[in-house]
Length: 253
Image 1: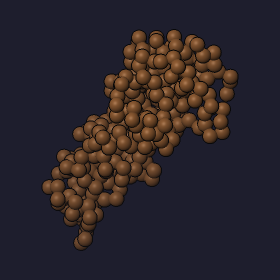
Image 2 (image 1 turned 120 degrees about the vertical axis):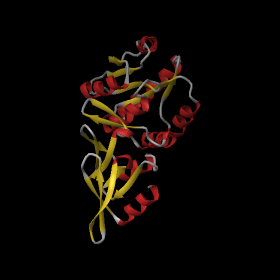
Image 3 (image 1 turned 45 degrees about the vertical axis):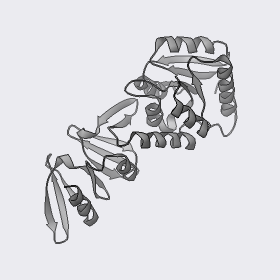
Image 4 (image 1 turned 180 degrees about the vertical axis):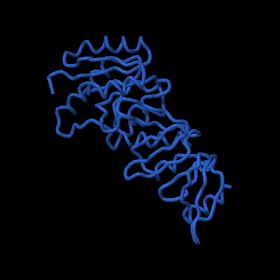
């Protein structure tokens, strides 16, 4: 790494970006390589330029700061969150020892945050990406927002937002989940067990260890062999139903 810390600013408000950029001019080792006006731009920019540091606004439309972190995963640089006052967020950041700045940014607080980043980058333990503390914060947020209304998928620098009502079924695929919609399929790094706990149990049923169905797309259940059944879907597909899956399905129907 060069002597300078490459940083990007992510905020949908032009005045907030300008204010932070001005404050950062006091730090000779911080080089602002780009500014992003939304979460989509942020994901693309991190993928493109690989910055060392990201100043990330939390409250943004469509993709907020937490969504950006979740989508970037291990590719995320060091992050300093920037936020207007949010009591829940601040308590969560403090509990997980994650760095944040309140708007308007206080110069002394900014200096302290920059020093922390310098120490992390110089230390052997200073590894960017979504660590355990960030994972816990994201998990807590998921639980607060459950049931899911949408699923976020990253494909390189592209981001897809899939409303859950458009999802026909999920299919387990090793460490990934394949998401089937009427138009195409998507691959997401996630587990079926994790998704099952976040989706509305009134609409999604675990038919089988490998399949999680949106029951709005179920046409009928048919016998397949002496002790097994299959689900016929509106798109013409059929999915296997395990014994426990059948019991769960009967409770919903």
